[in-house]
Length: 141
Image 1 (tube, rainbow, N blue to C red):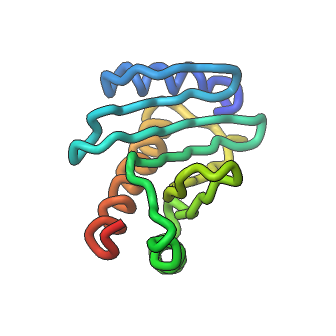
Image 2: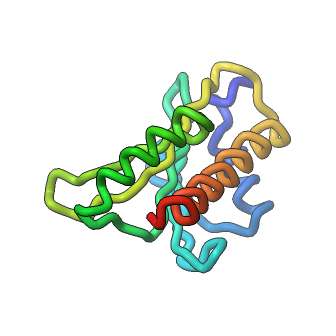
């Protein structure tokens, strides 16, 4: 069955398997981890349309204005070398603090069972953690 037809059920099963809770609203699920790996806070969202599934993660570190050039360079380097997730430096228009965002979009017009969905979601989660560790270790972001 295409993931677009059953992604919410697979998501609920994956979250239960991991022991995680989330908030669902429409076609989006939001996970907030106040004490994620490494003791940092994490926010992950998973949203869907009829054609794609979008994964997004941020951590609880914000960027000072002086850090923006390094952050943009680090994100470009990450994207050129690793590709997953796509690192984006977000600078809110409302004057809020800038941050790094990891994103990945998957085609969901193919068949997914629990094992395949779990592999996809776990890979995004781990690669995002690796990305945030990379920025912290290499660039002190």
